[in-house]
Amino acid sequence: MATAPGPPPDEAALHEAALRHLSRFAATEAGLRRVLLRRVERWARAAGQAGAEPEEVAARAAAAREAAARVARRLAAAGAVDDAAFAAGRAARLARAGRSRRAIAAHLRARGVAAEITEAALPAEEAELDAALALCRRRRLGPFAAAPPTPEARLRALAALARAGFARAAAEAALGMERAAAEARLAAARR
Image (tube, rainbow, N blue to C red; front, side, top):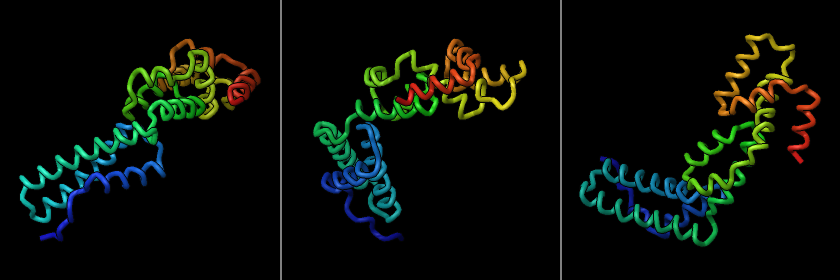
């Protein structure tokens, strides 16, 4: 029989855990709630392995899950968790890294950001070409390729941009750009 896991995490313990998490990582309200719920589930699993009554573990874990949701809501209301600021910062970083609007939207949705906040945080349509160029530079495609592309290499580059979520028009524009113009556009985008 395993050692007793101790009492379930109460609201104060969950609040402290949330603050420790937020001091290290940016998070959304949904993401913070998931972190706290994992903590509760670890306790419930340990209590079950220690031989505690399943009904008691289930009841105490349910109360702890409710406390986790309250803590996440309270920290969001206090401004410690700001989904809009998280989304704006993450979207800008991902766009600079060469991620398409579609990929950024999928990333934010996976982090629990609401659809309207995601839509507001997405970079402008005009920035899609800048992101495609950033991906081309990182992958050495199109204007950043070492040698002039063959028709097969161009198709592979077009496919890589399509898999990354870029529309055909943005992909074609990025692949057809001269290196000097592409470098100048990326330098202007960084400013």
